[in-house]
Every structure is written in C-alpha cells, then in structure tokens.
Length: 241
Ligand code: F6R
Image 1 (cartoon, rainbow, N blue to C red):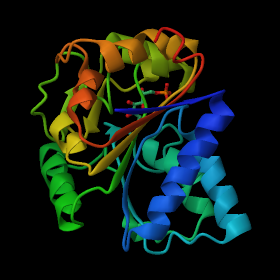
Image 2 (cartoon, rainbow, N blue to C red; image 1 turned 90 degrees about the horizontal axis):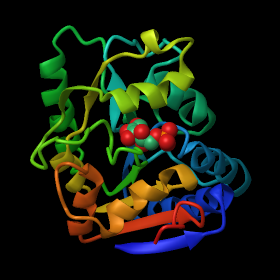
Image 3 (tube, helix red, strand yellow; image 1 turned 180 degrees about the vertical axis):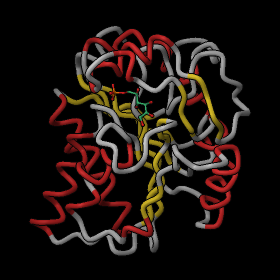
C-alpha cells in the first residue's frame, strides 16, 4: 500500500484529483469506479474546476458507482444517482449513458446486480476505483462479516451505517436499510484503487485498514492484499499510525 499523507481535506481532494486527471489523460478509454458520501465531494469539486479551467474532457470516460440504496429512484434527492448528477455528472462533459449507477428500484434486483457485473466486464473492468472508508471498516456497502469473495449483490446495511447516514435524511426511519453494492471481490478486480480518508473520526478505522489483521470482520483490511492501492489520507486520519 502506498500512503500519501496530506495536511487536510482540501489537500486530500486536490491530490486525488491530480491522480485521477493523470489517469484520464493517460488511459485511452478510462473506466472509473466512483464512491458517494462526504469524502469524495471535494474531489468532485476539483474535477469540475479542472474541467472548466484546464479543459480536461470526460467524453471518453465511463464511470461505475459502487452502490445505491434500494427503494430510491434516481430522481430521489437522497439516491446516490441523484448525488452523482448533482455533485459531478451535470457539471462536466461526460455522456450520461456512460455513467452507471446500480438501479435501486429495478423490478428484479438480483438480476440488476448480475447485469451490473456484466456491464463492468463488458467495459473491460475498472481502471481506477475510488473508495471511501466506513468507520466500521466497510468499503462500498460491504459491512463487517461480508465474504471477501462477494460479488455485486443486495445487502443489509449495518446499524452503524444507518446511524452514520441518517445525517442526510430527515429522520433515521427514512434511511433505506438495504442497498445494491459492488462486492469485495468485484472491487478488488479494479486495476488500481485509491482510498480517500479524512478526519479524526476515521483514524481508528484507517489504523485497522493499514495495520490490522486481514479479516472479513473488517472489510477494508483486504486492501492490504491488492497490488496497486494508494491511500490519500490527512494528518487527522493518520494520527494513530
Ligand atoms: C459510498 C460508499 C461508502 C462510503 C463510506 C464513507 O458510495 O460506498 O462506503 O464511502 O460510508 O462515507 P463518508 O465519506 O460519508 O464518510
């Protein structure tokens, strides 16, 4: 694992943006894996800036998001699809048909998960996968206890995740309890992974990710076994290392 220590959230976002823009420029038809949540918002803002200022084009880019809540359609402001449109897709020149997010209201959700995997494979896999880190060690919505061999599927969210994500909803009762998520094995197939971590609240989780036992009880620990992982983390997140 390569660890890049940065000062704060803004520097994490700028550094991640530079890395991503480099891959967009050097890979012919880049396929990016994207995350939602608070962590990558600054990265997406920086990407929009780069598009506007430096005319970096996203026309050849394809994206796959990690996950989506079950029961929320893409026009629901709490859906991850809506989040991605608002925070990134609507502001750059990417083709909407190249931005894939699992459909959380598909009539056959199991089939949706299978089809999502096929789509990723059809695009030749993911060149660069962006990840955030759950305080409980989840990556995407793969909660503690998930098999390392998991593929894209329907999952139940852990109570810690419901609690953490309640901040985006009017009340905790509105937080969907299930999601479609890329599996751990699916994520590990990404040719390069960049894990973004910011803030003291993630310090314990980051310590287990880097130095802890590789165990299904702490999903992010699997990243220790990937050949091409870069962690971009700020001083607060790295304070226990
Ligand atoms: C989001 C995702 C999650 C988040 C994680 C951290 O697509 O897959 O694993 O990356 O929950 O969330 P934040 O960034 O809000 O702390």
